Figure 1 (tube, rainbow, N blue to C red):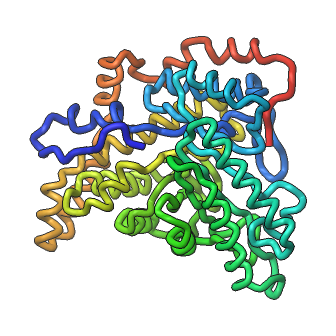
Figure 2 (cartoon, one colour; figure 1 turned 180 degrees about the horizontal axis):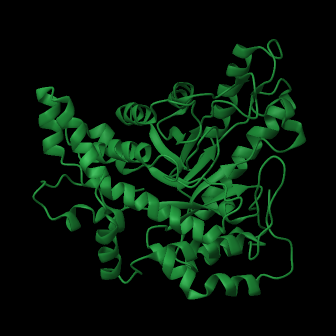
Amino acid sequence: MAANPVVALPASTPALERVAWAVDGLNIEIPSWGFVNTGTRFRVFPQQGVPRTVFEKVDDAATVNRYTGVAKTVSLHIPWDKVDDWAELKAHADGAGLRFGGINSNTFQDPDYKLGSVCHPDADVRAKAVGAIVECNEIASVLDAAAVKVWLGDGTNYPGQDDLRGRHRRLLAGLREAYATLPADTRMFLEYKLYEPALYSTDVQDWGQSLNVVRQLGDRAGVCVDTGHHAMGVNIEQIVALLLAEGRLFAFDLNDKKYGDDDLMVGSIDPYQLFRITHELVNAMRDDADPIAQATANATTYMLDQCHNIEPKVPAMIRSVMNLQETVAKALLVDRERLLAAQAAGDVLEANGALWDAFQTDVRPLLAELRVARGLPADPYRAYLDSGEEEAKYAARVGGTPASW
């Protein structure tokens, strides 16, 4: 959730002040699984210094926050991050200056879920899946977590494998049951995905299906947009704008892709697409004429959901945070008065130019100055590499079983 709402500043305001929210107000959520050994379908690639426990995952997330100052929450994945003493984990996170964001449910890795989870033809499997989400609700309550996130790998591989409308009925019934146990101050995010692992039909396959479901659950259920979960060429920023208008854009899983759900570092392939998305968010935050979109944008969660297969984990996460900060800063530099005037006049080139000029601005010196003024390193990525902490972590985490898929 945004610490401070973005306000519309006139174009005459110094650029340093206009981009300050990217350092003072933005919060980027860090996933615990972003630090573990991962890979492709063919191999998991082990690295040095990988966390062996969820406590060490929290430590790595805290390191990212210590260098960047804008990564104050951490997401967990259940059962990957289960512990015997949740109070101990909460105290550990508190001591590291972190809060818990999303508690992510896992209903896709157990052998029982081969034909689905909450949409499964078998009632016992459906009950097991609902129970897994309910358990996440209980954990969220103990940890004072902000949200429970549901992503379902449910679907079918062949025509005729199952009744598609029947699966939709089971989906609604199961999620209604889980939503009924959601803690009072916690929200539910429903993520969608075009395909994979189901290759013929996916039960929550796009933003419209996710929106349809969350509307039937309640006011504290909303859509999570994973930027990698779309067909090539889909206009993600338009989806963002429409979900903001509907008051149901609750969260992002941020990454980048070249072909499919590649989970590459955010902004690494198509930074202009990321800019267009952040522009819609900042534009909504500034729009006093649309209070629903404004409130929704100010409460949106920004989480990095990335798979660092070959790059070192902590440096990659710090670089990703900086990528998002830089893109948000560029969106904050869009001259809103110029843009609105050009749109009203039907001046296509001037309106597009208002975006392009902001995107072309090098905001790195501005962000560096703001960081230094707040006691942070001007370049968090370089500062971490020069600190020796990465090598010290390698030496400290020898032995044990590194966390992995």
